[in-house]
Length: 251
Picture 1 (tube, rainbow, N blue to C red):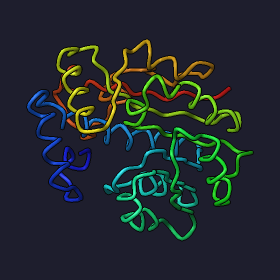
Picture 2 (tube, one colour):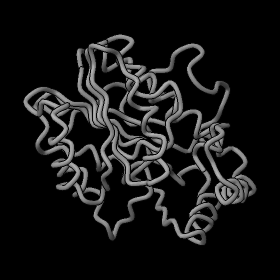
Picture 3 (cartoon, rainbow, N blue to C red):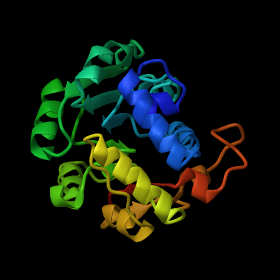
Picture 4 (cartoon, rainbow, N blue to C red):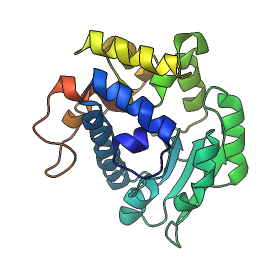
């Protein structure tokens, strides 16, 4: 569905039908998807310029160029990027995530974010990440698919725990703060198709950064995070985007 929102070609009839049902409820959903993608590009460039050269991208989804490794390796050719997902369709297209620079490393791990211990073991087994140096953990448009009964806050804490001082958490998260009725209907649409979704308030999203130091401008609607000319949709409203974004640094 996300690929469809972005105008991609790697989607199926059932995805398009579900995505169109969401669009009928919230026509701006594609704006949020583009804002999310543009945020990822800005975040990647920002952290690369800050000297971060290791990235773990959780819930990667269908590859859509430029992918994270292409963004960061353009500035830091030796950067290492590990992608993770547990969607068999993503695995089919994972080769598109492995075309990094000769100096850098890119790899894909089949793992489920709701099992953080197994995820970390699988990542460590690749040898691509040195946990003694700072790592950027990215959870983009993922945590709203982790409901409260799956304890998402503990999952994030466990994923961040082994990461060295100076590591960063970057996340984006859908919210119903601006259009509560529309997002309640969107959540119902996803649930009816077998995919539970839980949008959260800004206060609830902010909890994921407990113990971390937020990078300016803090937790904001995605298009407001360090905006750049030509990066993402312009002249949009917070309600159209309905997606919080932020980066927190581990002391």
